[in-house]
Length: 273
Length: 319
Image (cartoon, rainbow over all chains, first blue to last red; front, side, top):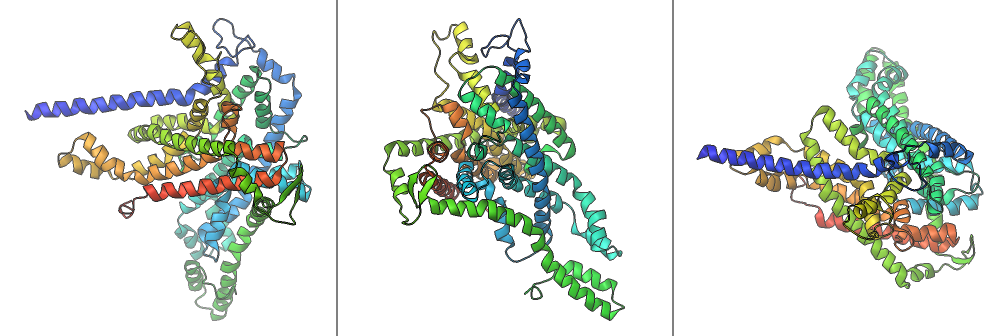
C-alpha cells in the first residue's frame, strides 16, 4: 500500500514538472518570437515582411548604407550614450558612496530624489523639459539631451554601485586605516579595487538605457539632433520597408554583444538584485 | 552646524588609537575628522543634486505652474490669472475619459498577465542551476535590452494583416481571410506584457529564493502533498515578490508610450499619447501639462490602492 502511494506521488510530481515545462516553453517562444522574426525577415529578397525560404538577400542591409542619416543617427546615439553614461557614472558613484558610507542630515530626501526619475512617467518628464528648455533657450542642443539622459540613467547607476559598495565590508577599510594608511590610500588601494566591477557594470547599464531611450527624445528633439531609435520610430509611422528590420537586426546583435560583456563583467542577476 | 553632527564612530575610534601617545595630535585629528565626516557626504552628493534640481525638479515645478495658465498661442501661455480650466477641460470630454479607462484597463490586464505568466517562469528558474539558469535569465532579459521600437516592429511583422501569423493561418486553411490583430488593444496588451515581463519575474524570483526549503520539507513531512506545499507554503511566502512585481509593472504600463502608439494605431490611444499630442504636436503646453499631472496622480493613487489591498500586514515579520 505504502509503496503504491509513493509511486502515485512520484507520478504526480512528474506531472507538475511536465506542466511547468510546457508553460515555460510557451513563454520562451513568446519572449523570443518577435526578436527571431525580425532577424529572419531582414534577409527577405522582397519588399514585404516575409520569412525567406528559397532566396536570401542582403539588399536591405546595403540600403542602410545609402542613407547617411541613419549612420549619423547611430553616431549621435552612441556619442550621447557614452558621454551621458560617463557623467552619470561619475556623479552617481560619488552620490552612492556618500549614501552608503555616511550618515547625514537629509539622506532620505536625497535618496528618494535621486530615484525619482524612475517613478515619473517619461512623457511627464518630456513635457516638463520641452517647456523648460524653450524658456531657458537651450532647446535642441546637445547639452539638453545630455542632461536629460544623465537624469534618466542615474537611478540605475546608483542602484548598481550601491549594491557593490554594500558588498564590501567596512572592516577592510578600517583595517587599512588601522595599519596606518591615509584615507586617500585606503580609498585608492582598498575601496576602488573591490567595487571596480560594480562601477563598470553601472557604466554599461547606463549606456544601454541611454542608447535605447525614445520617449523623452520625441519631446526634446528638434531638427538638429535625432537619435537612431527616434529615427526608426518616425520611419515606422510613415513608410515601412524591411530596411528597418535590417537596422533592428544590427541593433539586436549590438545589444546581445553588450549583454555578453555585462554578464562577463558583473553577472546579469546583479543588475536587478 | 557641522560640529554638532555625529562623526562616523568607527573611523574616529580607530584613528584615535593610532595617535594615543600624542595628545595634541589626537586633538588635531579629532577636529579634522569631525569636519571631514560632516563635509564629505554633502560634497559628494552635491553635483548630482544640482543636476537633478536644475534639470528635473525645476522643470517639473515649472510645468506644474504652467498647467494652471491659459493657452494663448502655440508655445505661448498666459500666467497672469491662474485657472483650473485645463483640468476641467480634460474631465469634460468623454473621449479623454475613455482613453483614461483604456489606460487603466490595459495596466490592470498587463499586470495580471505578467504575474500569472511570470510566476511559473520564476518558479522554474529557481529549479535550474548554473549555466542553464543564466541562459534562462537571458531569455527574459533579452527583450528588455532590445530597443522598444525594435520589439514593436517584431510584433508588427507577426500580427499585421499580411503578417506571419495571418499568412500561416490562411495557408493552413484555418481561416479564409486575415484576422485583424494589429492596431487593436490586443496587440498593445501583448506588446506591453512582453516588454515588462522581466520586471514581474525578478522580484518573484528573489522572494522565492529567500524561502527556506526546510519549511517545505517540514510541511511534506507532516503529510502535505506537493500541491498543498505550493499553495499553503510557497505561494503565501512569495507574496511580497508578487506585490512588488505588480507595482512595478502597473506603474510602467500606466506610463508606457511607444508601444501603444506603434501597435495600437490611431484608435487605441493611451494617456501618454494625449500628453505628447498636446505638447509637441499642438504645442498647447498648459493643457499638456494638466494631462501629464492627471496621469501622475492617477498612477500614484492606483499604485497606493494596490499596495493597500494586497499588503499582508500579518506576515510582514516573517519575510
